[in-house]
Length: 372
Ligand SMILES: [Zn+2]
Image 1 (cartoon, helix red, strand yellow):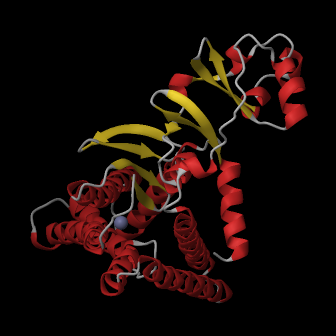
Image 2: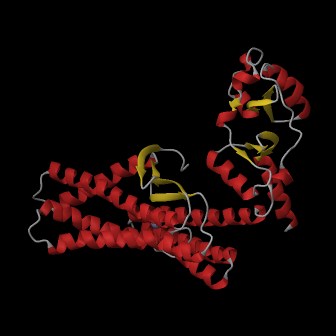
Image 3: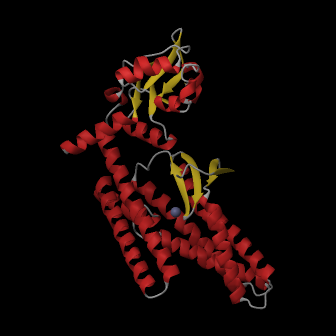
């Protein structure tokens, strides 16, 4: 879901993306801020309150961006490539290409965000408190931004993984025990525990009639609990896959097809007969692309006898490939990030096989069942 959204440019060489949910949140935040300004400053005109709401929302967005950028800048400085920063409903996520290899790096990276929010909050509150001669309009905006940044820092410092505070906790446990898996298990269990606690408090608030805050709290708790559970699952998966190579799982004898074969022929001769799902399209020993069940489903049934593999395939230039000696964790990452089902395995410019999501899944489930 985080890949959806629009690109809004780059900062420090890092692509920034805005998730669609952000627009809804922007309207909600602006509306609730304007509502607050109307009540806190009854002598303001309605337009004045709405403008203050919009300006505060935009600056809040800038603050969230600064928070995320600081994570990414520390990561980049430690040599971890950043794919993009995605801003969405609860703030942002920095998409790292890989996880930090040392606890010290994770510690610095995780702490950078909340520290930035705290400093920003301090600056806004200082302007509100000490600068006597600024207009009330600016003072009001600074007051809200100050507290919101501090709230952002406080929320992110909750010590439940995958929040920043949970990452700080994990890095400290990891540092001390040198056991990343155990550290992640403890930090994500705390994350789940805090998630349940927030849901419980939220439901209690709903019972006492404070249902807006109650719903929010329960929703945040649910979100946190889910994120904690799925981060741990992710790590457990990587644990199973790590150290195993593409060459162990790939299919080597993938049948190739010429570009002029029709889809109908392909379906009759290969897919229905042998149950194979994807085929490199090859002409004169040159790989032109890959055709999969997915590509075939993209064409309507009436076109099957007219369309050829060459017309429907995914061209080679748009395909991702891996080398046979690459780690299976890399394969999982690429498949998940790009939301695709198979990768070509290429060695010295030649296709030597295909590795698909199904292979990974059965590899994982067999090892899980055997408990190895
Ligand atoms: Zn953060």
